[in-house]
Amino acid sequence: MTQKVLILGGRGRIGASVAADLAQYTTAAITVTGRRCSPGESLGSGSCLVLDLADRLAVAAAIADHNLVIHCAGPFSYRDRHVLETCIAQGVNYLDVADNPRYVRAALDLKEQATAAGVTALVSTGVFPGISNSMVRQGIEALDHTDTIHLSYGVAGSGGAGVTVLRTTFLELQHPFSAWIDGSWRTVQPYSQRQKVNFPTPIGSCGVYWFNTVEAMTLAESFPVQTVVTKFGSVPDIYNHLTWLTAHALPKDWLRRPETVEFLAQISYRMTQISDRWSGVGIAMVVTLTGHNQNRPIQYQASFAHTDTAQAAGWGTGSIAQALLAGTLQAPGVWPVEQVWPTAQFQRTLAQRGGIVISDVAAPSSCPH
Image 1 (spheres, one colour):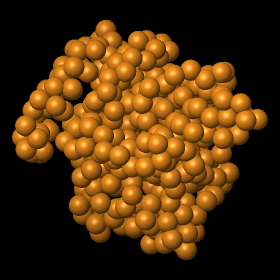
Image 2 (tube, helix red, strand yellow):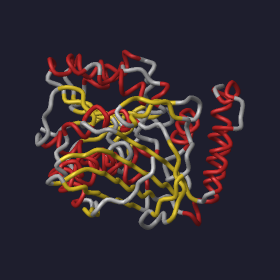
Image 3 (cartoon, one colour):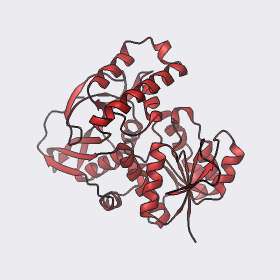
C-alpha cells in the first residue's frame, strides 16, 4: 500500500524542498498544503490542498488520511503544538522544521504521550537545526570525552529560504537568551561578540554572532558538555552590520511589534532578491568540538556546505522522512535529531543525496566563545 505524506506549508521554500526530496527518494504519495493553492491542484511532487491551520477540524481530517505529517508552516514562534497533539491522538508519525526554542520545548514535553501512542516524532529536522545536530553527534562519537561544542553558520543572502525565515531572524533579535557556558545557563545578547570564521565554499570568510537556536538548547541536554556556542552570520557582510544595528540600536518596544517585524522582513527580502543574484543562496556550517581521546586534548572539526540552503533543509528533513517511511527508524516519543538519528544512517542518506561532512581530528587550538 502506498504511504501518504502530508506536508503542512508545502508551498513555501522549505516545504517545497522537502516535497521535492521525498518525490525523488521515496514512492510516497505527497500532499502539500498552502493558503494559495486550489483544491486538487497538481504539482510536480504531488497534489495540493488548501488548509488553514487555525481550522482544527480540517487539520484533523487531513492528518487522519496520512501516514506521516511534516510541519513546515512557520514561523514556529507563532505556532502551538496542536498539529503534533493531533498526530499523537491519531497515531500518525510527525516531523517538523521548527526553529523556535519555546515551541520545541513544548513539543518535547509531549514525549510521554507520543511514546504511549507509538508515535515517532522528531523536531527541528532541517539543516540548522537538523543536519547540524547530526554533525555534532558524529563528532561526539569520535571523542572519548567532549567539553565544548562550537557551531558556526554562514548563509549567503536570503539562503533561498523565503520571507518566513527572515521573520524568524527578526523575532529572535527581540530578547536576550540563555546559553550553556561553563556548566551553567547564562544570558547572552543576540547578535553580539562578532567572530570571523573561514567557511568552505560558497561562503568563505564570514563574521558570525551569537544567535538563539534550538540546538543550543537540545545539545546541552543531550550530551554532558560544559559549553555550547551557536553563532550565525551572512554574506555580504553589510547584512551582518544591518542586523547588528537592528538588534542593538532600535528601541526594543518598537522591534517587538508584529508590524515592525513584518516591515523589516519584507524590506530584507526585497534586498536579498537583488543581492542573491551575485551572492548566491548557499550555506556552510562548521562544527568544532574540544575534548579528549585517551586522556589527550583533542579538537574535532567538521564542515558541510551546499549551494542552496533550502535544498539542504530538504535533505535534512527528507532523509529522516525516508527512514520513517521505510521503517528503518522507529523511536516512539518526541525527540531532537541528535538523540535518535544514528550517525550511520545520517551519513548514508546524506551521501545518497550527494552531500558529505568533511571532518578532521587534531591537536586543539583556541576557539573563542
